[in-house]
Amino acid sequence: MAILGLSADPVKAQASFKQKQKLNFSLLSDPTHELIEKLGAWQKKQFMGRTYNGIVRSSFLIGKTGKIEHVWPLVKAKGHPAAVLEHISQE
Image (cartoon, rainbow, N blue to C red):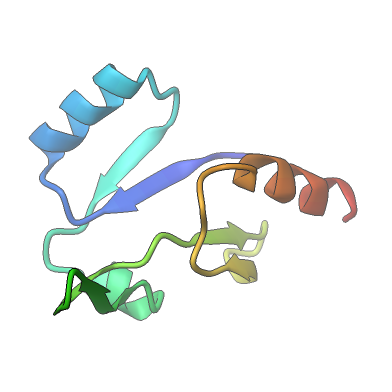
């Protein structure tokens, strides 16, 4: 099993974030949003009355065949890892 993070941030910014947060998994950079858009995670968002396009935090479980088996859209960080582990343990 592997965990990967994906964002539109440049590799250098991701390296700083990874070090600061002490992450033990790889981060993938998609500055053109090509994969992010294909996954449906680049959407219209609103903040303080302003509408803009941005990443909607989501998680994807990709099976051994490389196909997406489960999607968690609009993820909130609190409690999410436990939900993913619970889902995996039921398979």
